[in-house]
Structures are given as C-alpha cells and as structure tokens.
Amino acid sequence: MLELRPTCEHCNKPLPPASTEARICSYECTFCVDCAERILFDVCPNCGGGFAPRPVRPARHWRGNNYLGADPASTMVKHRPVDPAAHRAFAAEVHEIRPEWR
View 1 (cartoon, rainbow, N blue to C red):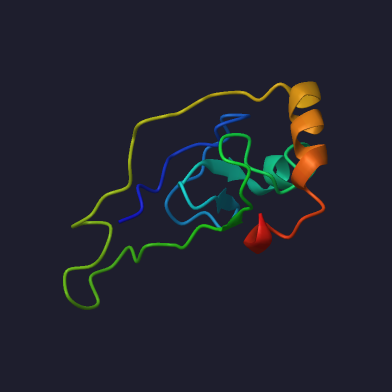
View 2 (cartoon, rainbow, N blue to C red):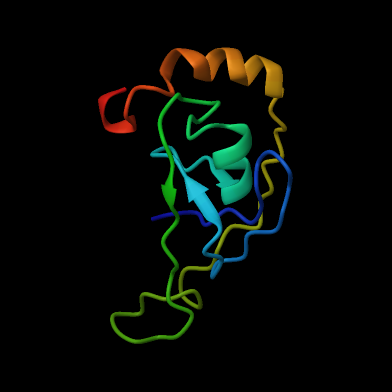
C-alpha cells in the first residue's frame, strides 16, 4: 500500500493525501509536480526512473474499509534536497530515454 508521503522530498512543499500535485516513482520517492518537471526532468534522483501522478486514497469509506480513516497517510517527512547541478549531469544520461525503457 502506498505511504502517501506528506511532502516533496526536494522543496518540502506539503503534499496532503488529496493532492493532485504529488508525483511518485516506482519506489514511492515523492516530489511535487514543479520539482519533478522543472528540476528533476522526470528522472528520479534516487533510482533513475520516471514519475507518475500519485493516486488519491478515498477520504470516505465507500467499500471494503479501504479509505484514509483505515489506512492513514504517512507523517514521516523525507526531506532530501537534490543538488540541481549534479542531478542535471545524472539526468542528461537518461532523460531522453522513455521511463518505461530505462
């Protein structure tokens, strides 16, 4: 189950569970859309994968006890700012390759 991390790992912008601005990689590294696109160039600094919009977990119980009340979002902040120059060099190697082919 997704942790739904509370902030962008780079800029520490709040990304509450209902945020449509959260982007995650397959390892759930979490960044805001601005950082994912403008600073990271759709290349995760931790694994080299691409980003996808983070799904929103239902806030209300609709069915099967699958909602935020039963499975709350994480409160653990992972603030690990990226060195933009070092990331540009890293991303230059892979950003032209589509994420599904990396």
